[in-house]
Each structure stands twice: as structure tokens, then as C-alpha cells.
Length: 462
Image (tube, rainbow, N blue to C red; front, side, top):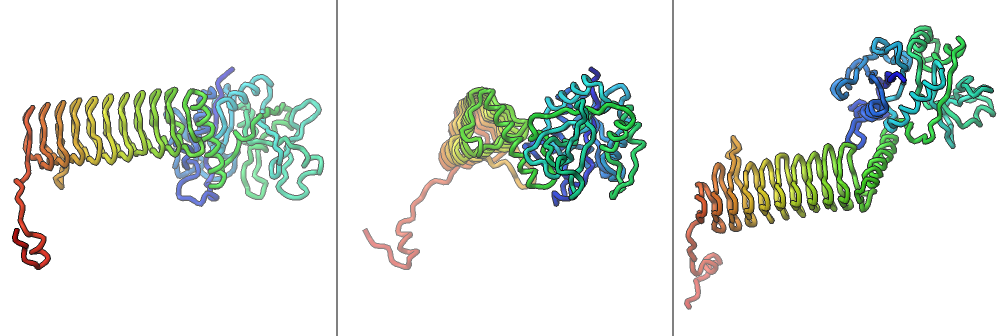
């Protein structure tokens, strides 16, 4: 079977979305709407994918490599959209036409339509579905052989008879065509209608009247063909896409304690035996290893978590947490944060653009920015790296086996050598040699009677 060319119609204005963002670029589980049917076409065996967009070329930067953008210069209907892609069609390859605002279509649906079209020898194959309530859809009327005789529109009273209205099989708006027959018919379709547009279904009428066989191919699950016209329908489709993602992870060995409170983008990868606690959001290109625990109340964006990692009640973006490391609760890992094997970022810890060594612990109440920390180090509570001088960022280097005491501030650029210590309350502005104790604080003095004098009383004699 020759690999089909898949044409995806995506030039609509989407005015019912009431948005400055083009409809096709609205997000669905971490992927713009248009990328869902594109992915289905590519996974379903398309030899070429052509997306027909509007004259604003708003989709140009959002299509995967190898996907062609054809521009429909004016909104002249679905048939006009296909004609806009004519130069990219191969006369020897069948053409499948999908809609960009039907994002739940699957690779299996695409492959099934292409296979059915190849097997039935028709010039066109229409995908149909049966609905419990087909109101508003065009009814499919078949002839005695089972071929499509006509599609009856039902938008206005009197368009269809009572018997036709009783038909539950409807036109799904997805088609397969012989390429040459399609282009020949479209070039003969007129614009004698209220909108003055070229309608793709009119090409089917011409093919049938010319003696061509038009077949039907039914899809069992109508939900895969749900369209998006407004934000209510967008929410419905997003929920179904999220359910599909959740089920795939759970069947692969991931535990989602409460799927209803969990958000997982389509690009996220999760290893087996990982536990995702409630109210956890895994976004972007996040990857989680095996046997990890993430959540509850945790957001992870474009980050990598290794095997056996624990992240509790924290926020991570652009970070890497390697095997056996622990994060949280209430930790914030910013872009460039790296926790090596067995490291810890504890309660109310913020780390940015820093390399935290193997087994190193930052237990609580600390900020570590633009810093390299060796293995086996412990940064005491309220350790701060002062990395910004008002104009430039500077790096701090902390060696292996270092122990900073509570309330230590390291003013970059500064180096603390292997095995060194700092005294509590120190502001370190100079390098601390390996094995040394760095202390930088004023000697304590006590002012007797200060409280009484502040209150305007003479101090009591002892």
C-alpha cells in the first residue's frame, strides 16, 4: 500500500474561541492543538503531511520538521483549502483529509482509513460514525450495495425526511481520496452557495455522478472525532486527552493515586513503579525514572528525575535530580539546578544554576545560586551564596566534605576548600583554605542596662 499524503485543514479563524491566540495553537496537554492530528498522521504511516493554514502563516513556526505548510490565501471553503495543497500531492499516493480542530484522532484511525480505502477500490472513502444524538450532522444514506448514495444535511427544517432524520450514521468530515480524481473534481466544483465557497463534500457528488465508487468506513469510538470550536469544547477534549495519557502511564506500571487531581503533559516520560501523589503537575518534557515518588502538591516542568528520587510539595523547572536524591518539602529548584546521586534539597531551599555534589545536603532555609558544591558536603541552615553584585553574577565554589554552620553568607566569587568549616553567622568574603575554619563576624560585647536606659529609667544597681 502506497503511503498516503495527509492534508490537515487548519486555516479557520476560530472566532468562537474569542482569543488573540489562533485556535490551532491553543494548548492541549502540553502540545498545540494542530500538533495532535499531525502526530497521529505521522504515527499512522503518512508519507507526507501537509497542513493548510491561513495567510497569516501563524502555524509556520509550530510545525515539526518535514511537515509542509500550504497557505490558503482566502477563506474559500474546505475544497479551496485542499486545492491550496495541490502542488504537494502525489498523483500516485492516496490523499487523506483531516481537520486540525479534531485533535483526538489517533494513529490507528488514520491507518485504518488508509487501509480501508486501499482495500475497497473506491475513488473516495468517507469516514462515518454512529451517534446516539445525531442532531446537526449530515446523515449518511447508503444504497443497496452498502455504498454511500448521498449525505443529507439537516441544518434547516425540511432538509431531510423523517426516515432520513432517524438515521444515526453521520458524516465525520474525514476522507480518503484518489489524488487525481479529487483534484479533477475540486476544479469543477462551483461556488453556487450562500457562502460562495468550494465545499469538499461537493467533490464526492461529482465523483459519484461520474460513475466513481464512494465507500464508507465507520469508526467505532466517536469521541476520537470530537471537534473544538470554543473553549467549552476545548476543555472537553483536553479532559479526554488527559485521560488517555493517564491510562497509558498506569498501564505501563505507574501509580497515579488520584488521576482527577493530576496533570501530565503528553511529552512526559515516567518509569515503572513510580508513585505520583495527588495534586502533582508534570509538564513539558519532564522525565521521571523508575521507583520514584513525586508529590503531593508538586510541579515539575522540563526537568529530569532519576530512579528512586523523592520530591515532596515542591516546584522544579529546568532542573535535574539524579538517582536517590530528595527534594522538599517547599523546595524551589530553578533552571540549571543539578542534584547529583543521593543529594538533598530540603525545606525552604532554593537552588539555581548550581551543581550539588553526590550525597551533599542542603537541609533547610538556604539559597544556593551559581555555585559548584563537592560531594559529601553539608550546608547549614540559612547558608546563602551572594552571587550578584548588582551588575554581574559570580560563582561560588564549595569543596568536598565542607561543613558550613548556620547563617553563613558566602559572597561570590569565593572558594571554600575541601574539608573546611565556617563559623555560625559568618560573612565569608575571602577564600577558605582546605581544612580551615573560616570565621568572619564581630566579637560580641554586652551593654549592661541597655533595656532600662531605652525605657528612660536608671539601671538598677546589682
